[in-house]
Length: 418
Ligand SMILES: [Zn+2]
Image 1 (cartoon, rainbow, N blue to C red):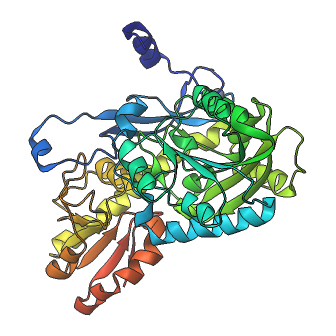
Image 2: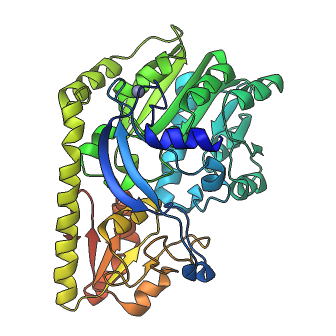
């Protein structure tokens, strides 16, 4: 992109799906660093880039979206997120594999391609059943971990060009999987067009992504960060696929990531359409997702969520309580930066991933340690940043109760779990 077109984009952004001018703000979270830019100790004294975190809603197609401030190369080339570090996510992957193999009769003759296959956390289960797989993963360090596990993986971004190349190499797919990737795609039409090319005539695509209706209903504003370019309702995603002659024939609502959708997509007319699609479409319309004023009401709700969390933390500190964080997920960084929570409230956080330990959270510079630190310092409150995994974490960390420690869950609104 040349300089002049960047300037034009900054003036009047347009919808990444339908091209209409974006004139309506959904939520403005102020300036924020990239949520996955964990800092090495030496970087703490260096200049740190902050970008506006302002979300728009398109008045024509209702796609909720961010402008693109950093190239995907910058964001994803050395990604710190390794899927295999979450037990519940692995269980989710295994359950999906069993379900999908049965439903679509996949076998040793089938070909399964996963886009954004991470460290092979999902494809390993297909491979274990003798089903040929291929992973596509843009982050080289994560892809390397997959290859070491025996999961063939190409290091690439996905779009029309990659799809054509894969088809030429006889990699057309019976099943294409994309979990938590659609939100990360800057060039949405090129991506979906690539899916169409890569899919065999009777093949099926499944995609999972956080559901916008749940985000709005449950104050999940912290799932908004620069790496997530789009936030999908069924209404919007259906239009996107239909524009590429792909039909959304089934949908499931999942508990993952605070409430996700799993959509099933095929070439037009190749599968019977489930009534679940019309049912959810009607519920979204009832919720107001086809009306602009419903989107406008969200911002005030989020300001109040911030005020309540800060009120709690201020009162706790005045009582002399100590607070440590648990986890260092991207969503935690949006929460902490937007609310202005630094080491004045949270002494440190811990994470099971060795790739994050010894680093500092972007923006807030809260240090990240090994989970053993919790037992050593015995904090009064443990603030659970990956609140979507709260049951799993409260079980793993049950021992904080030995010294009277309590869990603090910030979303949908601040709540103490003794
Ligand atoms: Zn649009």
